[in-house]
Length: 335
Image 1 (cartoon, rainbow, N blue to C red):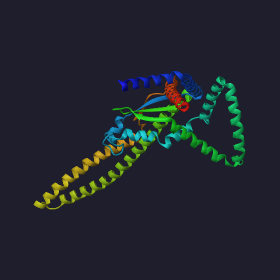
Image 2: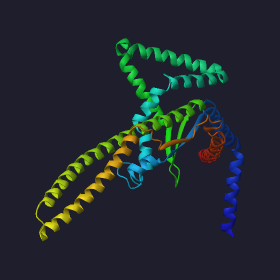
Image 3: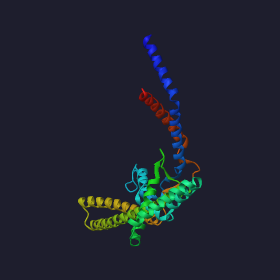
Image 4: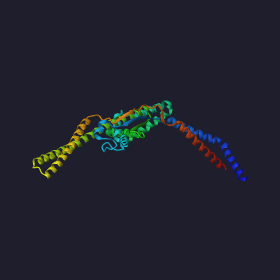
């Protein structure tokens, strides 16, 4: 009974402390919520645009190269993973950066800052003036020879743009399909959609170039094999004619039979190679369409960051925890 009374008294003490220090707890909670509100207000919104592409193979390709999965030229079962890595490559991002208008990221950022300035004009103007002064001082020190380094700056700007493109994009394969999803995040919904669509477009063009290069390589390989087989067939036919001109004997008939079989086999291989060679010549100049854009990215209407309600909930919970801890700390400190 005595232990139960002690526990009840202990619980009552906790409740008493919470009521006694309720203003501390409320102050901490309100402060945490205000901080979250300010962070939500000043955090630039992030939008996500998505486009979907299909990795397939045309009938023309299959006739020459065979199936995708078991073909050493087009790759095996990891073809989708290979295409994903190509999408993430530096060359794709560089092609996108060269297609996009110059300073497109800076312009989009300036527009977003301008929108924030309209909402919080006095504070944004102060921060902008402070930033401009610091920027001018630093620029006067570091970039004294700016005119001499224009080419370096242009190259550096291109690299920064490529870095931003690669950092903003995510590529995922849709489970149990030959489809790839390309997503791009940006503060501007229209720019996010434009970057995602440009990535898909550059990837399709690059794929056509790669496939045509593969077709040329296959045509060259078949052409070399065709010349070798033609030479071999000619030699075998000459041997056969020579054996036919000799007097007939048992050994002679056996050699003739073997030579006739060898000539027939060589003729069949030669005709097959000739057929594949003609197909390769046709497909070398054809536009391969093994990658198609299924859904173009549209400017998203809903932002993905910041998640304001979730941030408020987290801030409220942390405020309660911190407020309670501070209340008991004050109580113990007074004792």
